[in-house]
Image: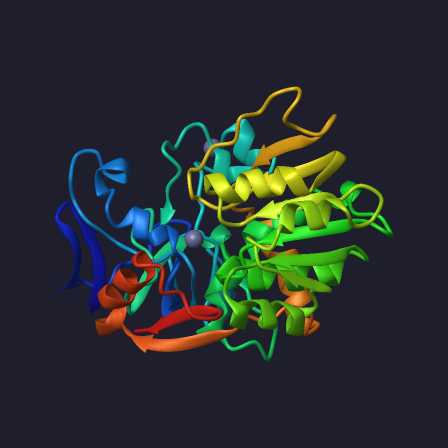
Length: 340
Ligand SMILES: [Zn+2]
Ligand SMILES: [Zn+2]
């Protein structure tokens, strides 16, 4: 089968054997696999995941159909349409057993499909059976991959921030890309907060309003001060889906006293946290993905029609060029999906 692999010298489309599911694993025929901006970092850092060299298939937003299972997995799983949850721990340590498998201290650095293990940019992939989450009936697996990662990451951040979202609250979402367009819908479905989308691209601001945002602002249009003037004291929750210096500063400027700013985006920017630059008792937090059990919760919102992934499709051959465009910041609207 063909696979887009991260090699020590960059991305290559290679012929590789169809994998065999081992004990506790499922073989998934990939229907579609989302291109995530963090793949641009992953494709240049194979040694981070595989210090001894070697290659792996990229793509951590895959969905498809279970074609076979290994020993120890119920045969009834075969034939199910599933989303592959792309973060695995050892499954056995205290962290994993308490439901936080992506922070497993045994498997380091964080590994999963498309992140050291073979991912979704191929015709087939193998994953632990506990990481393949059944899709509700009527949801097309071609477009379902981004519900993991692009959907799950903001879902976890919002779910764990619900105490900050009361009636009359203001919530800001910075960056309306792959994650942002899902974050708006999830926030709309889970809270009564006034939602402010912050995004430089006019088409994406319009898109955010279509998806349920109440207000859409250009970041350079004094967005921090304008949000701070809303509600009682600004945004009780800010989700920064970009994570560069300017968006972190904007997020804190918009945040309320006793508010919360969550850095979701992997922009690796910095903010000078201090007593006089940060609102009183404001929580600054990072976050990373979510868990398979949260993905199952999020899929109930998808099933109810409250969350939908906006996608466009490409072939596997087009994937390396598409990542080059993502690297140059040419994102478009919604999520790009490769169909192997
Ligand atoms: Zn991602
Ligand atoms: Zn573990």
